[in-house]
Length: 308
Length: 180
Image 1 (cartoon, one colour):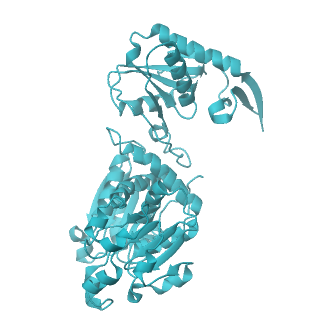
Image 2 (cartoon, one colour):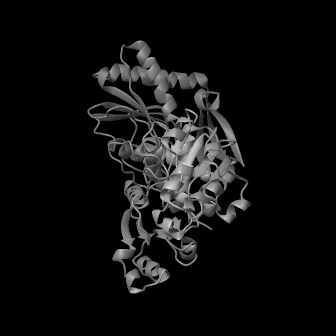
């Protein structure tokens, strides 16, 4: 199908056909990463600004590499090195940057809706690289690509999302995508980290992790943000590990073909045991590789998008 | 509305493919150095057929690759939507090789310019030869085929629709005339 969107703001807005278009192109872009010269020319002469108002390693490097592989010129701006510290608003920052004749803006921001806000006000293509607890669409798309490498179809695929779902924008993007694909999704988290919005999705909820991991094809583990400990949402780290971590012992009970996913950064020994993260079932580094390919596909498609 | 006219049948196509293979066998100075690259979506079929003929008639194994040139097009910023990208696959070292590049129809030369740029990103071949089924004799760049099965100068608003058994279940080339 023809890709017509000018911005990528959420998985919620995408159709299955659009997600498939991204994935099909991403599989082809992955081949570019294996070439001796990892550079192709479609974004030659285009300028992309990576506007990161929150810390990031994977996503920022992944976008930067994707832009370079497509021959775009890119500039990284982070909060610490920008005039945001002097009180400049998001819109003023973006408009000033755009006045320098940029073509695309990749934005990460701690406010839900920040990407949409910009998309409605500037002329550049806008890509949401994570907006507060709202969505992280490129992460979800790279996850779908990774799952697709191991399983032919999402239909009835048994998927468990385990961990801090409440604060996770990745979980929200995944849930929208899995719902559209018709996957069989179970959520497992301490009751205090289970958001209310899950009631609007057709998902199962299981608070006993030993039951939740049974017969799953995909176990997607979310990071426990260590700073949340202080908020009283779970008693102690040790109790969290006892009740919700994917430990060595729990790993042994999984099907041999279950894949283990994590969006990073991992807290080894907290939500996932180090040996599980390094096991042959872990596809965590494959997710990172696919992230570059998916972002190349998105940048390429959005550059050709004309409306919305 | 458009009108379709029969241009070539299976026998005509086979005859051109055989001529291409014969020409390569006759003119190549060192068959051990040759490799084939087909431009998707029809050039890769031609390359595969010729590889099979040459391997039957000689003792060489010909490395075979295929390329999608869409990322190298010169009109990406002019067309409405970016086209779907298929995977380029060149699973061998191109350096110092004699590359035979195959396509179904040679028209303006712009596809071949894109293909040459893409190939150069994979290595530095000793030579590149271009083999096409049909040369429309309407080049816009200083590029021309080393071998063409047939020359057919047709108006710009007419096109050839090349069908192969491997992709379309039959071997046939149609001439498509847009109704005026």
